[in-house]
Image (cartoon, rainbow, N blue to C red):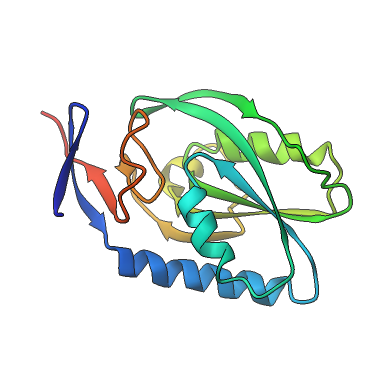
Length: 182
């Protein structure tokens, strides 16, 4: 599909599935290399990163465990500037290497919240892998780049491959961008 409608908004195709799959393989190869001989905890940040997380861990050839946390920071098409913890961390990460799997790092609010929140559990290391990075937004406020990212995209609102607009659109296998409204 070249375009979709979700609720009251129009979206057009932005990134094809084959391009996403190549980038996920690239990130997996980096993690496999960096964590060879280690047993990291792969922490999925729900809900948006579930597809990226699922595809990524299938490509990891290292021993790893998985855990989940659910946060919320968006309403409609904008960040609220506040992170709400919906489901907290249920597994011990003390003295473990942790790789946070995020769908998108844009304003940096959720990313930096996670670094601070998880640090209190004293992991050996904390790294983040994100599918999308909006450096033009993020670098206005923060300087600590994500450790792994597949796409550095412009400031566009996107859906698909786990990302939503008001809880719809996560099921699309490709990425769609919001069509400018006039």
